[in-house]
Image 1 (cartoon, rainbow, N blue to C red):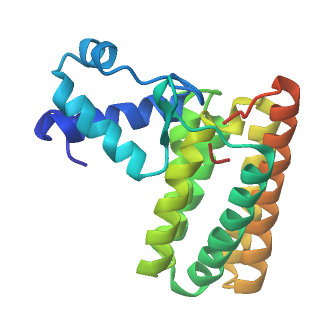
Image 2 (cartoon, rainbow, N blue to C red):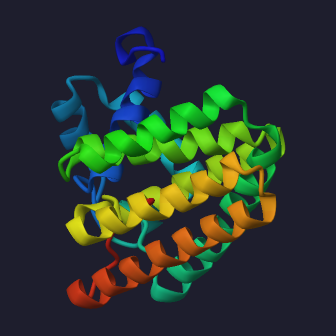
Length: 222
């Protein structure tokens, strides 16, 4: 991975703002004021402007009347549609990975899930979960699927922190990952796809519960 210090300032600012969206520091509806962001990031307004334009291209930022650049919000129907597409793509990835994943990749997935099981709720668990899903998608060996999933994952960032912030959900997610792994080890593509779809549907249910509890869109992959 390229260190942010080695990147042009606009790209570095873009990555840092993505991290802020992922963590919930920049929540849906938050206004992006160039002067404030430039001061916080320790750079000029020009690279901040470039970063905001890229976020707009990604569909993460919209321009609202009398507010300017604002982090996009998703309504209930959009969240459901997003997870439906995630179930299709990740389910397909699991089916393809059952055929294409190497034994080394399967061992890596198992190790990541074990680490996730032992990790405290927080940033480390979120990162382990992200890497687990990324590793599985890469193991599908389908460049077009990887590209489509990358675009979807950017939209998922709008939802903020993962549903794994809920300890009960974290325990369930580890068990769901284990079910996917079991099918992958058996080279059972149909079973792997079904297990991954069930995992994504459980994540959606957790997301909807969180949205209803807060009356606001809540948070990222699970």
